Each structure stands twice: as structure tokens, then as C-alpha cells.
Length: 239
Image 1 (tube, one colour):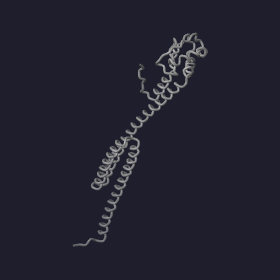
Image 2 (cartoon, rainbow, N blue to C red):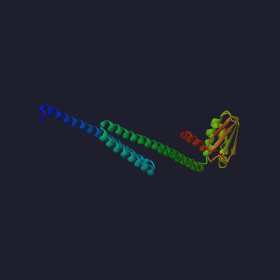
Image 3 (tube, rainbow, N blue to C red):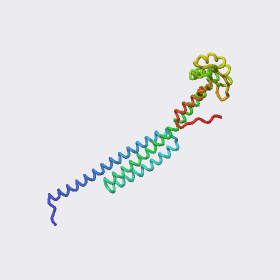
Image 4 (cartoon, helix red, strand yellow):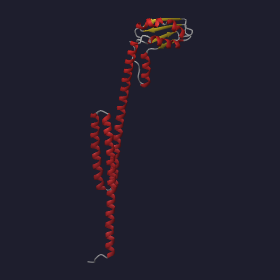
């Protein structure tokens, strides 16, 4: 049997070394992809922790559990296929796993948008409820509030011959005492009638003229504010 020549041995050894180098390069690239995927998973975990603090704890735990299961399955699949089938198929699996994680992140962000909207709407309702309470207290404690509002509203009723002022029964006396003053604030007004209406809360006024109506009730002004904050909001029908 002939012994391989020195040259042949070198070629064989060189080919073996090249194979080892290629295999090592494949493993290095695969490990890099796996580490990149692990970084994506760590980023997702951080997002989940933030979501858990802002949203309902039970819902966040369910989402986190689902993410862990899917991420683990994607990791194992990518790693095993990378070992069996080589760099190309391993890289494809890693990309698929990363895409799965990204889709889950999108789902979580959508959930956060819902939570934020619900919190915003509740904050608006609470703020306006507090404002209505404060306005009610001020109206009860300030006897001249209706007179001041009537004076301001009368300035919008200029050039109207007849004006009718509707106020709460408890405000009739104070507004009637300022009748002359109210006449002077609206040029062209010849007569003013002051009448009571139970639907007008204390401190508020409604001015009726031949040309239309000026609603000076504080509750109406708050309704306007609420409508501007919630475009879909509509005021309930009055009894």
C-alpha cells in the first residue's frame, strides 16, 4: 500500500482545517443570532413589566405567561433547527421568533392605548364632577352671583326692546333689586321682566329676547367644556 505523499497530507489536513473553520464560523453566527433574539426577549420582558404596572395585574400576568411560552418555543425551535440544518435555516427561524415577539409587543402597546383612553375619560369625568360641586357650593354661598351673571349676559342683549330674565326662585329678589343697573348695561332695551324658573340653578340666569336666548347657567358652561373634551358626548335631556 502506498503512503500518501507529504503534499497530499498537507492538502487533506488543510481541507479538514477549512471544514473546522467553516463549522466554527457557522456556530459563531448562529450564537450571535441567538443572543440577538435573547436581547429582544429581554426587551419584551421590560415592556411587560411596565405594562403590568399600568394595566390590570391579572391581565398582565396572562400576557406575560403567553409571551414566555411563545418565546421559549421559538428559541428552542430556532436553536435546534440551527444545529440540524445549518446557518441559513437557523437564521430564518431566529427571524421568525423575533417577528413573533415584535407582534406581541404591538398587541401589548394596543392594550396600553385602551388603558390610557379609559384613564383619560375617567379623569375628565372626575374633574368635571369636582368642578360642578365647587360651582354648586359657590352659587349657594354667593347671593350676588346671579346678579353679576345677569349683568354680563345683558350686554349680549343690546338692541333688543324686551328682555326676560329667568332666575332661580331664591335669586329673584337680588336680581330684581338690580333692575335699573341691568337696564343701563344693554343699550336699546326698553323693558325687563324678571321671572323665576326652578330649572335654573342658583347663581345662573337665562336671558330671553325676541332675537333668541342667552344661557348663562354655570352648568351649561361646564357642559360646553365637557363637550369640547369629549367630542362624542351629548348632554342628557332635561326633565
